[in-house]
Image: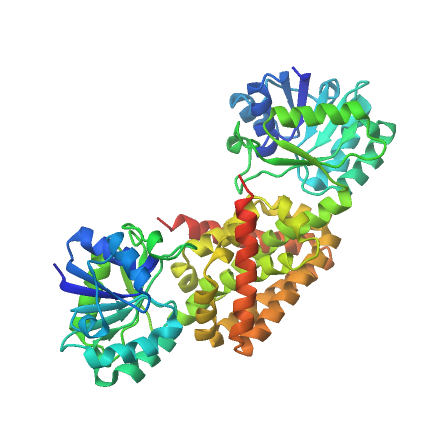
Length: 287
Length: 287
């Protein structure tokens, strides 16, 4: 047992899968659920993701509280929770951006910021909600923690141990580097997929195009099936890093456009070959 | 039995899978292989993709000859084959672009252009070569044929019957519309994936980025593992349609960049929501 009670704010894919994995590992005795949507909490209880639905004051008495919410809600939720936090309670999150979450936690938690461990599990799905939760979602996946100078060492160690019990490998990064890296390898691809699908969908003859789209299109656009609300929040939260990535990507596409326009066969082969090599090297390092 | 002998020029994923499926369906008695690479033909024979390796003069005596090659080689191969074609022999291809293939066939085949049925199976893989061939590659997949005014009806009917025997659904399109549609739903996504991976790979600190790339990145960039030579040829062959698509995509990304820069939450949600709806509607129509 790593903690006696765990409270989860946001009992969807991310929070629900964390709970299932920790219960299976025997890392927690009781899981509490809290949130503004009673129907969702009922579903989460029926699915065994939480043992009980509680209010904010009871959630604050848990040993560890995980926020698994759109990042835009972090500050408001932490302000709601802060007055109820028992001494020693650890707070952590699962948000996809970290600079803004760290700032929100500093603003909302005051002296209790020392008990906040910012985190980001690199696992997910275009599916969402309690029904999407899976006991093995974090198995072999990375979780990035971004502790700050003032973060209490025991709080960090506990959160690390919980993620490891859930099957994940814990890494640490500075929040700024975290946001820059994920702007490039996650947020930009999402925006690129959304933009491509929307551009086709807006065409008067869009149906003809979708009719012949096949497996390459399916994989390329899978992430365009992701939650619009979640990605609006991530985009706004990581706006500065994402603008840099968007500019770099648009510039790369413009270079490629010039090469296509000039019918430069050699340059095309060079770009495609470098990309394939990098992509295959990367794929071979993955489990 | 639909044809007695089938000759395949290019015994890789596409040609080899066609052969395997037709043999299984009993649609052909003997499959001949022809090409400039004897080692590859030996592998194809060992894998059972072809029964015999033959030269161009013998290939021309087959009832049907399939070209399954990079589209840039179409004209040269047809010129090599043309003097050997027996009366009534049908020629077809599996190239990813059709305007240039039709032009190449007109130039190379002269009067025998009536026996040429341009085709494009919408199936593939980032894998290639004889070892990638699969008996079920075309099962439930679309094949687009682009017959011309002068195409002999019996030649078209035979090629259609062969693809149906291989498990595919045959559709017809004009070559120009074919190329416009596939520029948008296949060629552009490939270029977009190649460009994204290459841009990351060129960075001095690229390793840090690849280190944290996960499942969204994997699916988005899967097609960047495709054959550089094949995609160089497709890009050049469909250059004009592709430039139009590249411009539309860059414009869509610039609009999105403006929305991100302006922190326009409503517009972001609108773009993401339209894209998700279109993507999910499309995915639900697929087998």
